[in-house]
Image (cartoon, rainbow, N blue to C red; front, side, top):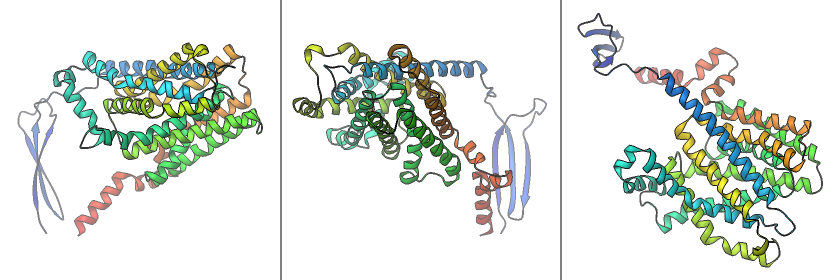
Length: 402
């Protein structure tokens, strides 16, 4: 079979070439004429200043995420006292503040985005409500998508806050960082994770598990501290379930869509979950009083939680995603310092070793997939043979033979 194709490709030509040129390439299947046409577009040269600016913004975002997470955690731990022991009330109150996420996003659009400001807020909202499907945001679509996540959010954060009332904040954050290992396990089950990523990510799971064991050993495997450890691990699993299900049913949402989603989640929390708060109060499961309510700590925790979510959402648009992931890791040593300075809770060497293992597992998990696949290969030839480009070439050869 013989065939002839004409391909026009725009290329940057040497200044000495005054006329377009063409070349012909042929093989057993036919002949391809490639005509080289000088491009009218100027050559794009990477902007080093832009890259540096993006990196500096990344470091600022990392610090902001770490500080806001540590501050929120420490404020939450400080709410516990003889007159206040109410983790569910804390979660309900804090989540209600998520109502400001989407209005805050729209304010950022008006102040910072010229293109979206020209398009109008109605166009922006129409684009963002697409996260709820073709019908947009209605009562039915809002409840159908958001309510299950609100329940998962509430249970996960309840275990996290409850753990803070039992063990040190640094221990809770270190154990919570193991959620990346659980994310991979669930992704393999629900999202059909790539098999080529198995060796590296399995090692991440092993490291995280070893870190959990070391921290548990340092705190003791019995008594109330074990309850705090189990609650921390439970919150890590809950966070993994939330993130994997969000990826499965929502997908790669934009900052505006995530902000709208969080606002609707805060609305669901405010409207639907207050009866649970009252039931826990009147059955004496939780202890609190309007006269002795620690409003300063509650408001501080809620405000910093909002800041944390804003930095995570907008940080992805401003800098590299890796910096967003590292922001949560920074929170572990910062919490350890805060515990030592303000609560006289030492973070011993065994806990440091456990934290290093968990952070190591975390870093392995956030490595680019291409690098993980290369690390999983024992030799260059097997990497080349299993690469997407090689597989595509093999598929093209089979197609041509047919």
